[in-house]
Image (cartoon, rainbow, N blue to C red; front, side, top):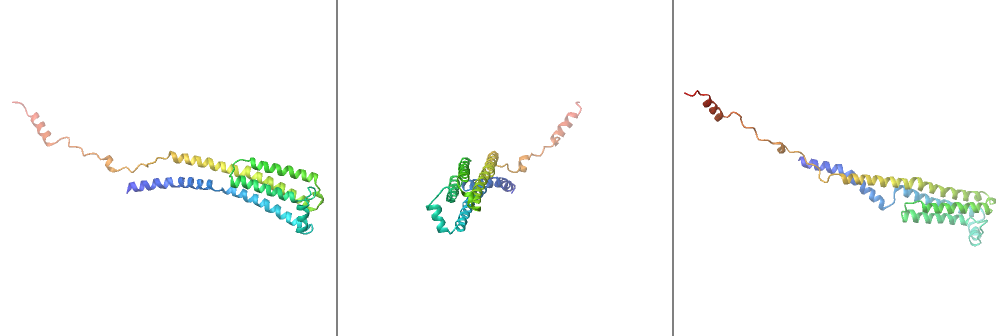
Length: 217
């Protein structure tokens, strides 16, 4: 009974650590929560820029007419189509790098943010977007802000948290490896059994003492 209790105690003590390791290894096979949030924000970036571009097409004279003007008759100085393509480029590159390939480095988002920043600065300076109303300001500013928010999320949230989870996993794994494989069983009473002591003064010893005490005639 005691041995069963001790083994059950050992299983209880080791179960949480093993469960934590199995859950962490399961998370490593898929995408962590913070990385999933980052991928959702990248998707939101594409959808939000697309929505703004569609609204701009409707406001300026209808979708079909503006699509022909901005896509087929593309002009770098007047078209917003390249800002939409820039959002598509960011989405494809970041999802491929951090969702499909599960990259754990910042170089991919550094490239996308640098290209986005350089392109938008040149387009605002050279093109005539600022003379086309509110969307000439809104689309470049929104695209610029979203790109830098993605950089902040990855650099300050995703990578540090995943590195911390990796360190905690290694520490738990080392602690589990240091645990004894066999837990000590309960101490039985038989281990401390000692035979009863024999009487120091038995009957034969008493007779011998009486014989020695008799005077010699």
